Length: 291
Image (cartoon, rainbow, N blue to C red; front, side, top):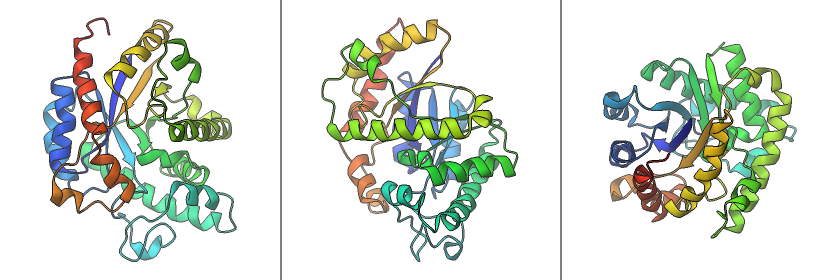
Protein backbone atom coordinates (compact mmCIF):
# COMPACT_ATOMS: atom_id res chain seq x y z
CA UNK A 1 0.00 0.00 0.00
CA UNK A 2 1.12 3.55 -0.75
CA UNK A 3 0.11 6.11 1.85
CA UNK A 4 0.02 9.68 0.56
CA UNK A 5 0.31 11.53 3.84
CA UNK A 6 -0.22 15.16 4.87
CA UNK A 7 1.23 16.60 8.08
CA UNK A 8 -0.09 19.52 10.16
CA UNK A 9 -3.84 18.87 9.96
CA UNK A 10 -5.85 20.77 12.54
CA UNK A 11 -3.46 23.67 12.99
CA UNK A 12 -6.11 26.08 11.65
CA UNK A 13 -9.59 25.60 10.26
CA UNK A 14 -9.11 26.98 6.73
CA UNK A 15 -5.71 25.31 6.47
CA UNK A 16 -7.31 21.99 7.42
CA UNK A 17 -9.98 22.45 4.76
CA UNK A 18 -7.23 22.83 2.17
CA UNK A 19 -5.68 19.57 3.29
CA UNK A 20 -9.04 17.77 3.04
CA UNK A 21 -9.42 19.01 -0.53
CA UNK A 22 -6.42 16.83 -1.32
CA UNK A 23 -8.46 13.85 -0.12
CA UNK A 24 -11.72 14.83 -1.78
CA UNK A 25 -10.10 15.60 -5.14
CA UNK A 26 -6.77 13.78 -4.91
CA UNK A 27 -4.93 10.74 -3.61
CA UNK A 28 -4.44 11.80 0.03
CA UNK A 29 -5.23 8.91 2.35
CA UNK A 30 -3.37 9.76 5.57
CA UNK A 31 -3.09 12.78 7.86
CA UNK A 32 -1.28 13.82 11.03
CA UNK A 33 -3.22 15.83 13.59
CA UNK A 34 -1.63 18.66 15.61
CA UNK A 35 -2.46 17.69 19.22
CA UNK A 36 -1.92 21.07 20.90
CA UNK A 37 -3.95 23.12 18.43
CA UNK A 38 -6.77 25.28 19.77
CA UNK A 39 -8.70 24.17 16.68
CA UNK A 40 -8.48 20.46 17.48
CA UNK A 41 -12.22 20.09 18.16
CA UNK A 42 -13.14 21.93 14.96
CA UNK A 43 -10.70 19.82 12.99
CA UNK A 44 -12.32 16.67 14.34
CA UNK A 45 -15.69 17.85 13.08
CA UNK A 46 -14.19 18.58 9.66
CA UNK A 47 -12.68 15.12 9.59
CA UNK A 48 -15.68 13.11 10.79
CA UNK A 49 -17.22 12.44 7.33
CA UNK A 50 -13.92 10.95 6.13
CA UNK A 51 -12.52 9.40 9.32
CA UNK A 52 -12.94 5.82 8.09
CA UNK A 53 -11.06 6.52 4.86
CA UNK A 54 -8.02 8.32 6.27
CA UNK A 55 -5.18 6.94 8.38
CA UNK A 56 -4.99 9.34 11.35
CA UNK A 57 -1.67 9.92 13.15
CA UNK A 58 -0.77 11.97 16.24
CA UNK A 59 1.59 14.73 15.08
CA UNK A 60 3.64 15.18 18.26
CA UNK A 61 4.67 18.81 18.50
CA UNK A 62 7.53 20.41 20.42
CA UNK A 63 7.91 23.22 17.90
CA UNK A 64 4.81 25.26 17.23
CA UNK A 65 2.35 26.92 19.59
CA UNK A 66 1.64 26.34 23.26
CA UNK A 67 2.19 23.29 25.39
CA UNK A 68 -0.59 21.25 27.00
CA UNK A 69 1.32 20.77 30.25
CA UNK A 70 1.69 23.37 32.97
CA UNK A 71 4.56 25.58 31.66
CA UNK A 72 6.16 25.66 35.09
CA UNK A 73 6.54 21.88 34.94
CA UNK A 74 8.39 21.85 31.62
CA UNK A 75 10.45 25.04 31.72
CA UNK A 76 13.30 23.47 29.73
CA UNK A 77 11.22 23.16 26.56
CA UNK A 78 8.90 26.21 26.72
CA UNK A 79 9.11 29.85 27.70
CA UNK A 80 7.15 31.40 30.58
CA UNK A 81 4.09 31.72 28.33
CA UNK A 82 4.15 28.04 27.51
CA UNK A 83 5.41 28.50 23.94
CA UNK A 84 7.86 25.89 22.66
CA UNK A 85 11.33 27.39 22.28
CA UNK A 86 13.81 24.60 21.52
CA UNK A 87 15.35 24.06 18.11
CA UNK A 88 16.10 20.61 16.71
CA UNK A 89 19.81 21.22 17.27
CA UNK A 90 19.30 22.38 20.86
CA UNK A 91 17.38 19.22 21.74
CA UNK A 92 19.99 17.15 19.94
CA UNK A 93 22.69 18.69 22.12
CA UNK A 94 20.48 18.23 25.20
CA UNK A 95 20.45 14.51 24.42
CA UNK A 96 24.08 14.39 25.52
CA UNK A 97 24.10 17.12 28.16
CA UNK A 98 24.25 16.79 31.98
CA UNK A 99 20.59 17.89 32.08
CA UNK A 100 19.49 15.08 29.80
CA UNK A 101 17.47 13.32 32.50
CA UNK A 102 15.51 16.47 33.30
CA UNK A 103 14.82 17.09 29.60
CA UNK A 104 13.66 13.50 29.30
CA UNK A 105 11.23 13.85 32.20
CA UNK A 106 9.72 17.08 30.89
CA UNK A 107 9.41 15.82 27.33
CA UNK A 108 7.72 12.67 28.63
CA UNK A 109 5.17 14.80 30.46
CA UNK A 110 4.27 16.84 27.38
CA UNK A 111 4.20 13.92 24.94
CA UNK A 112 1.86 12.03 27.23
CA UNK A 113 -0.54 14.98 27.34
CA UNK A 114 -0.52 15.30 23.55
CA UNK A 115 -1.03 11.62 22.84
CA UNK A 116 -3.84 11.28 25.36
CA UNK A 117 -5.63 14.34 23.97
CA UNK A 118 -5.81 12.99 20.42
CA UNK A 119 -6.28 9.40 21.55
CA UNK A 120 -9.29 10.41 23.65
CA UNK A 121 -10.87 12.86 21.21
CA UNK A 122 -10.45 10.81 18.04
CA UNK A 123 -10.73 7.41 19.74
CA UNK A 124 -7.89 6.13 17.57
CA UNK A 125 -7.07 2.49 18.26
CA UNK A 126 -4.36 1.52 17.69
CA UNK A 127 -2.22 4.64 17.67
CA UNK A 128 0.04 5.98 14.93
CA UNK A 129 2.73 8.50 15.88
CA UNK A 130 5.02 10.96 14.10
CA UNK A 131 6.11 14.53 14.87
CA UNK A 132 6.32 18.08 13.65
CA UNK A 133 9.66 18.67 11.88
CA UNK A 134 10.62 15.08 12.85
CA UNK A 135 11.60 16.14 16.38
CA UNK A 136 10.76 12.68 17.70
CA UNK A 137 13.90 11.37 16.02
CA UNK A 138 16.13 13.37 18.40
CA UNK A 139 17.54 10.79 20.88
CA UNK A 140 16.18 12.37 24.07
CA UNK A 141 12.76 12.83 22.46
CA UNK A 142 12.64 9.32 20.99
CA UNK A 143 13.68 7.87 24.34
CA UNK A 144 10.93 9.88 26.03
CA UNK A 145 8.39 8.70 23.48
CA UNK A 146 9.29 5.04 23.91
CA UNK A 147 9.16 5.47 27.69
CA UNK A 148 5.65 6.92 27.50
CA UNK A 149 4.51 4.12 25.20
CA UNK A 150 5.87 1.53 27.63
CA UNK A 151 4.73 3.12 30.90
CA UNK A 152 1.22 3.90 29.64
CA UNK A 153 0.95 0.59 27.77
CA UNK A 154 -0.23 2.47 24.69
CA UNK A 155 -1.55 0.43 21.75
CA UNK A 156 0.84 1.88 19.16
CA UNK A 157 0.90 0.25 15.72
CA UNK A 158 3.21 2.67 13.91
CA UNK A 159 5.97 5.16 14.64
CA UNK A 160 7.27 7.04 11.60
CA UNK A 161 10.96 6.44 10.94
CA UNK A 162 11.95 9.04 8.29
CA UNK A 163 14.85 7.10 6.83
CA UNK A 164 15.28 7.51 3.06
CA UNK A 165 17.09 5.54 0.37
CA UNK A 166 19.05 7.89 -1.88
CA UNK A 167 19.49 5.08 -4.36
CA UNK A 168 15.76 5.07 -5.08
CA UNK A 169 15.89 8.69 -6.17
CA UNK A 170 19.01 8.16 -8.27
CA UNK A 171 17.61 5.10 -10.04
CA UNK A 172 14.54 6.98 -11.32
CA UNK A 173 16.19 10.37 -11.92
CA UNK A 174 14.24 12.11 -9.18
CA UNK A 175 17.00 14.25 -7.68
CA UNK A 176 16.55 17.37 -9.80
CA UNK A 177 16.20 20.51 -7.71
CA UNK A 178 17.62 18.88 -4.58
CA UNK A 179 18.41 21.54 -1.99
CA UNK A 180 21.68 21.11 -0.03
CA UNK A 181 19.84 21.68 3.26
CA UNK A 182 17.55 18.74 2.49
CA UNK A 183 20.56 16.56 1.82
CA UNK A 184 21.93 17.48 5.26
CA UNK A 185 18.55 16.85 6.91
CA UNK A 186 18.25 13.46 5.27
CA UNK A 187 21.72 12.37 6.36
CA UNK A 188 21.07 13.46 9.96
CA UNK A 189 17.69 11.73 10.09
CA UNK A 190 19.12 8.56 8.57
CA UNK A 191 21.82 8.47 11.26
CA UNK A 192 19.28 9.05 14.03
CA UNK A 193 17.04 6.38 12.51
CA UNK A 194 19.82 3.82 12.77
CA UNK A 195 20.37 4.73 16.43
CA UNK A 196 16.68 4.55 17.34
CA UNK A 197 16.00 1.36 15.40
CA UNK A 198 18.98 -0.35 17.02
CA UNK A 199 18.16 0.75 20.57
CA UNK A 200 14.47 -0.13 20.34
CA UNK A 201 14.59 -3.04 17.93
CA UNK A 202 12.37 -5.21 20.14
CA UNK A 203 9.65 -2.61 20.72
CA UNK A 204 9.63 -1.37 17.13
CA UNK A 205 9.92 -4.85 15.69
CA UNK A 206 6.28 -5.58 16.41
CA UNK A 207 5.03 -2.37 14.80
CA UNK A 208 4.06 -1.67 11.22
CA UNK A 209 6.95 -0.75 8.94
CA UNK A 210 6.86 1.66 6.02
CA UNK A 211 9.46 2.77 3.49
CA UNK A 212 9.51 6.56 3.78
CA UNK A 213 9.89 9.34 1.20
CA UNK A 214 9.59 13.07 1.71
CA UNK A 215 12.60 14.74 3.32
CA UNK A 216 14.85 14.65 0.25
CA UNK A 217 12.40 16.97 -1.52
CA UNK A 218 10.93 18.54 1.62
CA UNK A 219 9.17 21.77 0.72
CA UNK A 220 8.96 20.82 -2.95
CA UNK A 221 7.08 17.56 -3.31
CA UNK A 222 5.92 18.61 -6.74
CA UNK A 223 4.12 16.32 -9.17
CA UNK A 224 7.18 15.78 -11.36
CA UNK A 225 9.35 14.57 -8.46
CA UNK A 226 6.68 12.37 -6.90
CA UNK A 227 5.57 10.88 -10.22
CA UNK A 228 9.14 9.66 -10.82
CA UNK A 229 9.61 8.14 -7.39
CA UNK A 230 6.29 6.31 -7.67
CA UNK A 231 7.94 3.91 -10.12
CA UNK A 232 10.22 2.74 -7.33
CA UNK A 233 7.36 2.75 -4.80
CA UNK A 234 5.26 0.46 -6.98
CA UNK A 235 8.12 -2.03 -7.23
CA UNK A 236 8.50 -2.03 -3.46
CA UNK A 237 4.74 -2.60 -3.02
CA UNK A 238 4.96 -5.58 -5.39
CA UNK A 239 7.57 -7.01 -3.04
CA UNK A 240 5.23 -6.66 -0.06
CA UNK A 241 6.52 -3.37 1.36
CA UNK A 242 4.31 -0.51 2.56
CA UNK A 243 5.13 3.07 1.59
CA UNK A 244 4.60 6.49 3.18
CA UNK A 245 5.08 9.57 1.00
CA UNK A 246 5.00 12.80 3.00
CA UNK A 247 3.47 16.08 1.82
CA UNK A 248 2.74 19.45 3.43
CA UNK A 249 -0.22 20.78 1.43
CA UNK A 250 -1.74 22.93 4.18
CA UNK A 251 -1.17 26.56 3.21
CA UNK A 252 -1.82 29.13 5.94
CA UNK A 253 -3.09 32.11 3.96
CA UNK A 254 -5.23 34.00 6.47
CA UNK A 255 -3.47 36.90 8.16
CA UNK A 256 -5.20 36.21 11.48
CA UNK A 257 -3.87 32.64 11.47
CA UNK A 258 -0.41 33.68 10.37
CA UNK A 259 -0.26 36.04 13.34
CA UNK A 260 -0.84 33.10 15.69
CA UNK A 261 2.14 31.09 14.47
CA UNK A 262 4.89 31.13 17.08
CA UNK A 263 7.70 29.58 15.02
CA UNK A 264 9.38 31.81 12.44
CA UNK A 265 10.33 28.74 10.45
CA UNK A 266 6.71 27.59 10.39
CA UNK A 267 5.55 31.03 9.30
CA UNK A 268 7.96 30.92 6.38
CA UNK A 269 7.20 27.31 5.49
CA UNK A 270 3.42 27.36 5.80
CA UNK A 271 3.02 30.55 3.76
CA UNK A 272 5.42 29.46 1.02
CA UNK A 273 4.09 28.68 -2.47
CA UNK A 274 5.46 25.17 -2.01
CA UNK A 275 2.36 24.31 0.00
CA UNK A 276 0.17 25.04 -3.03
CA UNK A 277 2.54 23.06 -5.25
CA UNK A 278 2.28 20.03 -2.99
CA UNK A 279 -1.51 20.29 -2.79
CA UNK A 280 -1.65 20.46 -6.58
CA UNK A 281 0.59 17.38 -6.80
CA UNK A 282 -1.73 15.33 -4.61
CA UNK A 283 -4.66 16.27 -6.83
CA UNK A 284 -2.81 15.76 -10.11
CA UNK A 285 -1.63 12.32 -9.00
CA UNK A 286 -5.29 11.30 -8.99
CA UNK A 287 -5.02 11.13 -12.77
CA UNK A 288 -2.32 8.46 -12.62
CA UNK A 289 -4.68 5.53 -12.93
CA UNK A 290 -1.86 2.99 -12.59
CA UNK A 291 -1.20 3.93 -8.91
